[in-house]
Every structure is written in structure tokens, then in C-alpha cells.
Length: 138
Image 1 (spheres, rainbow, N blue to C red):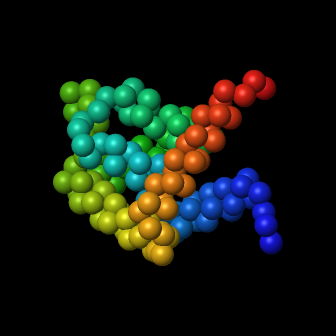
Image 2 (cartoon, rainbow, N blue to C red):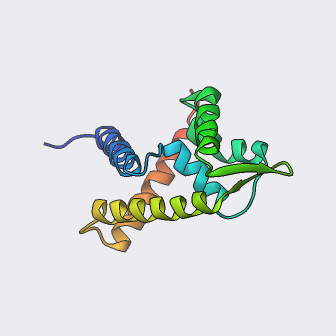
């Protein structure tokens, strides 16, 4: 059956969320927790910088969920605050690397049979559609 793009975008979004949640649950991580670990993996970051970096991902869940996730990461000794900067512990760095490996494996499975050019084209089209939607008056 020929379905509109909105159907496929929503269906893919639901599938991606379920796959990512299941993948990260193997390590007792939520997606937001993994995003925190991934953001902190490059450099120590102030809490305000972290909040700004993760804002697009946290719009639906709000600040309370972000605070709970951060508290959980601190309790698990994966993240600590030093001199005003959030930093990964060695355990946090190892878990982030392990989670990233699992997520990358899931992404490879998800994109099996899709060529690099095809993938790039899909991303380009979706990006342009988003930009067009942003320009249309509401």
C-alpha cells in the first residue's frame, strides 16, 4: 500500500525509539542517560552547557526527568562534578564506550541493505523538508 511520508516517519520514529531503548536497557541506561554520557565523553562540561546541548532531546520529558537521570548517573558513580564541571568517571567512560558500540551495531542492523548514497539522500530530503516546514507560516 502506498502510504504518505508522515506515516513512514512516525513508524520509523517509534521503531527507532524501541530499538534504542532495548539496546540501552541491556546496560541499565536510558536514552537520556546515554546522551549525557556521550556529551561528556569529549570534554568536561558545565551543567548549563550540558542542559543546552541536550535541550532538543529533552523537550518532551522536561527538567525533572533530566534531573532524575543525572542523579542516577551520579549515584552509579558514572559522572561527578568537579570545579563546576561534569566529568565522566573511568567507569562512566567505559560504559559510554560500550553503549556506543551497542548503538552502532543496532544502527548497522537497521541500515542493512541501504547504500551510503541512499542513506545520505534520505537524510538530505528529510532535512530539507524540515527546513521547508519551519518556513511555512502557521
